Amino acid sequence: MITLNHLEKKYADTYAVKGLSLTFPDASITALLGPSGCGKTTTLRMINRLIEPSGGQVLLDGQDTARLRPEVLRRGIGYVIQQIGLFPHLSVAQNVATVPDLLGQNRSQTAKRVDELLSLVGLEPSVYRSKRPAELSGGQAQRVGVARALAADPPVLLMDEPFGALDPIARDEVQERFLNIQRELKKTVVIVSHDIDEALRMGDYVALMRAGELEQFGTPDDLVRRPASEFVRQFLGDDANLRQLAGVPVRQFARSGEAAGLPRIEAGTNTRTALALMLRAGSERAAVWEGERLLGVVGFSDLTRAEGSGVAPAGSGAADAAFATGSSSSSPSSGSSSSDSLSSGRPG
Ligand SMILES: Nc1ncnc2c1ncn2[C@@H]1O[C@H](COP(=O)(O)OP(=O)(O)OP(=O)(O)O)[C@@H](O)[C@H]1O
Image (cartoon, rainbow, N blue to C red; front, side, top):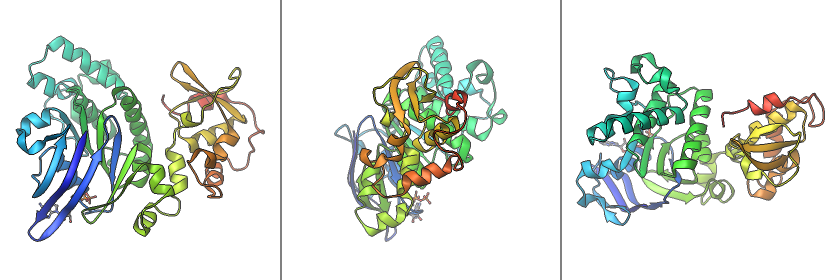
């Protein structure tokens, strides 16, 4: 658990971060969100002591990080940044293995782990392990960066706009992959973002900052439905409900029911996309699968009446708007069934 205790950073007579007290819950993703210059990166870099605080404390599992040697501290903290900084002269595999190699870990075990991690981030090891960074696309390089940060198996992962350089489609995919990885690895993750969609989608919790201070901490639902101030409401914008719906995986709506013959939908598919896919398939219900495991079924009306779930408030229009992003000319009961479009909707 990471706790910030009246954390401060002052440059000359201006505070970049001021009196920040906040706990990042274990095994969860917390998004640090806020306008440019509000102190997100400074906060993140005070956690791994790339920036030394001017006041206050960072506690890691109750221990004051100021008392640890920075290099010892950083061994337990992965760090992913937008400019990934892969070593150009090393292969992808060597880049991922940087920390395990530094720590003198067993070579063959490391090689196995590197392959596992490359597969996890969606890079086929046999294709990518020998490539040089210059041969990768931006998105592939960022995946290698994530794999490298995970290679040392740190309990804590700090990510500073890790997907910022990606185009929207690639970003969607890498975010989804990361969420899948996180469901398995359950790291304590702090992710800096100024992208509201990303924060609402990725964050189990969101810490919204303003001018170096904390404006609100809560679940995405808290911020969207119970904004603590006019600033929060305005920052999230009028379409916050719709955005949140876009960030909610359809697994949240899966319930027991007869799944035989229903088109398949991957559990990680976001609700807005799920609605569009069901429309396209002309099916009012779909079976929700998590890989090989059937989670249950979901009905069109469950998604369009998301208000009951605490996802979108009644009368928000969120569900209607989500509906319209699909195929607005067809109705759920029209059109031919195409389970292919459902099952190929999103990587599981
Ligand atoms: N080395 C420095 N010297 C002086 N001021 C600094 C320094 N580093 C950051 N600042 C100031 O501290 C404030 C917070 O910066 P920080 O980079 O943490 O913001 P941010 O929220 O991450 O912004 P962005 O989203 O634009 O990256 C800014 O006003 C910035 O100008």
